[in-house]
Length: 475
Image (cartoon, rainbow, N blue to C red):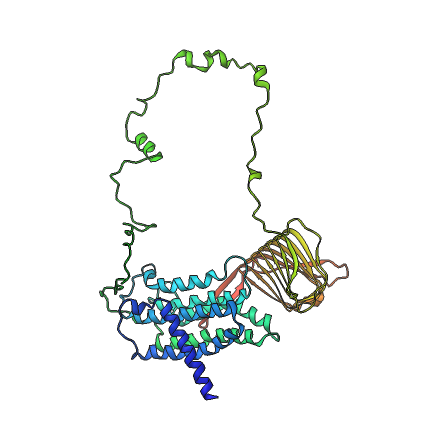
């Protein structure tokens, strides 16, 4: 048993070292001294070996994009280690803006994780999103002190994880009692940050990384050994610069030249031709104002360009894929969409629909409505969760039960719940104009509307922040 555990830990360390090598280790590129004797770096290696042993074991069982995202996660933590080593040779930046060059390797890795969540919603989207959002916690390696615009390192890690936990919880809810590997992966990811990374920082870097002495020059990267054409010359000034650029000695062109001449005191009318009496419209015979027969004929109609552009909407779909997933895509103006033959092991994914209505007549595992506009859906029961993501103006009616309902990045959502679904847990994030309508206690069958808050007020009391919804009642 102990031998198997040691082998797993050694394999995890080997993967981390490979990720560091592929991630263009900053410490190596800048020729930094070995940090093998630094207790904080040694503790970082031990922390990663323990945390990633569990995370990688679950990811390898799941495979696919989850394993790819986990590898990017390992690469980012390896880059963060390199930056901790490099910081000792790097002068402390004066501001976060001046720390961008230092953070570039980490930003590139985060961009790689973010790219996995873009475009058409991929499989295991919640896993991808959990990883991409959580990586912002690693920006603590650029903490510059109080007043730099960032919370202290341990607080920054906790805040960043709260942003990612929204999607991580979706993984737990979706795969609870269905696939233990996904549940194990989600739990391991959380423990990587809290308490893992948070406690490590609290012990070794509570005030941020250790920077080089003031006035030292940033280390320069070694010149590449490969031969090739020289790189293009760097621009003389940043693309977006707040400094006023020196006046150019080149003559201005286009409209700039026109305004320069108008304001420069030159005689701008010197080149104009003189208008004689016979050139004036009132003295010209062809401008008498009488409509002739030739002018009465209508001009040929111009061809409208509106019809020359093809629609960007994809091919409409309503089909069952692999016997497990109903796909409803790109339906426009369809008020009669229906899914009748479904069961509790199937999921429904609705994407890119507009001005349409879908009726789900049966019990399914989960339903996701993504990037839809003016869309309505009526369903009976879901086993796991109902989700609305990236939508605009949707109406949802639950006629049965739904344990979890989530509204994410949506503007305008009307949610109708019956008495059986009042126990549903409703989660919202980055959304507005959300209203939940529930049956009235009266016998008239009317609906009572309850708006969900989208603005909050935060108070600092007793050493922590207290949050409550903003009330506009005037009380």
